[in-house]
Image (cartoon, rainbow, N blue to C red; front, side, top):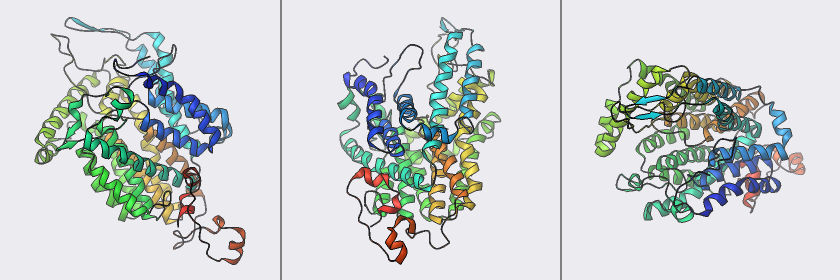
Length: 501
């Protein structure tokens, strides 16, 4: 087991109990609802430090543990869903390619590195199977789960509703931490996974709840905020709550996260979802993911300059401006190191880091998932990793015009924008979880099914479909009022359109 010295027993209880708990949840709830509850619940409440390290398996931190547990439960209780998804016939193959390239990375880094008095260890051949399995579990499995669990617009609405509800729940914890400082992780699990001095930003505490840091919390809240704004625009409620105030509340919470980049993107993208036509939402998403894929090439060619961004941030927070300037300088050093083994990368054990040639100490504090991925796994690893999320967004932009209902177009375009935002966050920050890859799998499946389905006629997208009404009401075409169900599970089990008052 890997963990922190001050962690209490609840860390290990939570990690070891998650798989049995997942089996119970799958027995109680329908598979799609059980999966989304476990995936979001695990990301939100499992400890952000510590991992179960068993022989022959990669270290199972909360991200690997959650997606692996859901996959195992799906195999045990709903294998027909996986069979219907035809594993290996879609983009999850990129995850397999990444795993095979990872084996090649191991064998190309069997040399040790010497920096002054310090030696960075070599990679050994017996690590290759574990590395390959970790890639499959972290990339191919989340994408496949997204495809298998989301087949149509009904599943898409359920997923966006679950994201909105997750944001509402987390906002309660966030308000407490904004007042008392980030303490929930310490109160429950006995430790804080980061240095506490990063908790103070822009004149207040930056919450993180059970995330690894405040940045991970901020981007998660931005994800839930965009989902809530889409539901508000399409007048789809969650648990009978009025959708517009819910969306407004989560917009406010994003602006209170005190993470400057997320606050700016939240302020810009919320109006995009609220007011623009779906085709324009999709175009913005495509532009964002295209820039993300182009960014390494632009940096390699020294085309991009971050000086204007640093100057703008200096007007808000001089300390933050210095941090950004240092971060981009480090990014340049890591990129120069990545050029040396550009195709397959340097592998693990911090071999992709920059070290002082005299003292042997690490000379940089790394930031930016993209440059770390490029340095450790090379161009192949970068393309397969980012391609899992970029390709579904681009493909969905072509399918969007064939989706007939305007409501479904808005929801689908919003999911594209959510994934694009998460990818943009990978440029300056980390890949905090596999949620973007899971959402990309859902987008790829839903866009295909919704483009092939026959949607409602123009002008009827906001009306409740006749097939959701009782048979007698269909015969008479009389309007039927339905009260929101009282049980939360019943609410999420239904499509959000059925829950309107």
